[in-house]
Length: 355
Image (cartoon, rainbow, N blue to C red; front, side, top):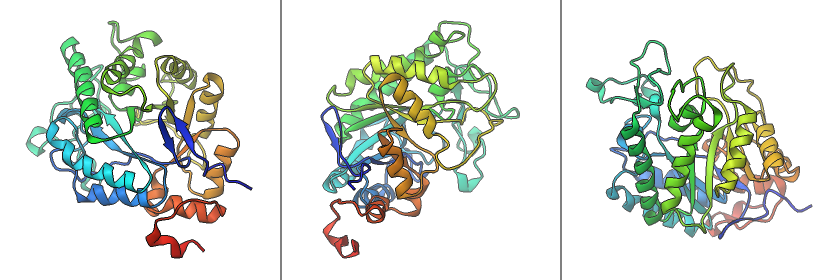
């Protein structure tokens, strides 16, 4: 039987050779935002490993938007050159290069995971964080500054200019990060957004900033290329952002020209209660797809070929995005093709492993 996972997907003028995408995964290995050969090998190996779409890790639109000092950035034209090299290699492997633009908000200025993932003060190379409201992610940390009108305009401009650079760098898919407790998600959720102006309170006000960022990106992003928004479908916390709100936002984003919703969850508050298990987030992607008609991507503990195949074949989502599974196996696309006995083009250098 023909594998549905290894059918192509056309989104606007971009054709993905299969339904496997490599999810953005921070490597914490940049210096001043600059990509290195680590990123070339990391991203390039997953392209030669058979995935159809390779989405670069959360790439900060400003220095203060980085999660850690090791994050990639795209806030200066000088960052472009290495991305061009990486993207050219990805495309040489018949894969599509994508980028996730991000601003960490109150979750910024922390050390790398292997250095403790601790909040950094200026003496440790950290910086002042910003957020919709002056509420820290942890109770005992220095609170972020609440963004004023000038700060909000700066973030919009930063996203627009970053998009312009992303086009110059040769990215063919754009993802806006509005999930996992980072800045846009902080505006969406009433747990982190206590504003009383036009950006806080009602659903319409809380989604305003995300819609403004989408519009800012669309000024520079070509209409013929896919635009994705990643959301957390639920905060997994009482009084937080809900699946019903995610469905409503997804409908609006579809009407605004967004092509696909990358459906994750959680990350906003430290007291979240997530029932982890295989496919635990897939029902969110399915609900959003069925109730709005927009394309969706499913993520979260998708680790096996037949599991991924079932998600696509049953119509629960249009893409599967793999993270940890691809860290364990850079050739995960080829591995899944082998496991499903599906036809796909292997790099000539690897063809002896097909059987």
